[in-house]
Length: 60
Image 1 (cartoon, rainbow, N blue to C red):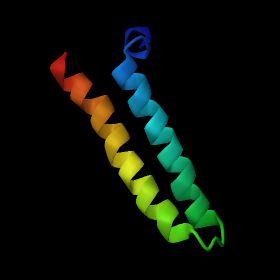
Image 2: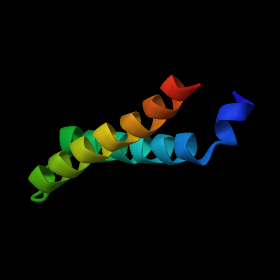
Image 3: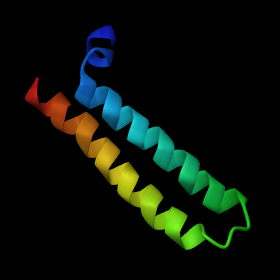
Image 4: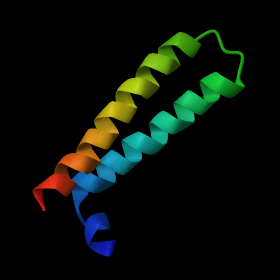
């Protein structure tokens, strides 16, 4: 696990995945006028974050 945390691509993917989960949870829990933007942004961040984490995992 520590080897993965030293890899910048995995850390960036983890960061974007966590931010996307925060955005998507705020849409589900809140009554916000910008919820549509948060939904699209959270979905895009989730796809990007997971791709960053799993592409590096497949190379090893």
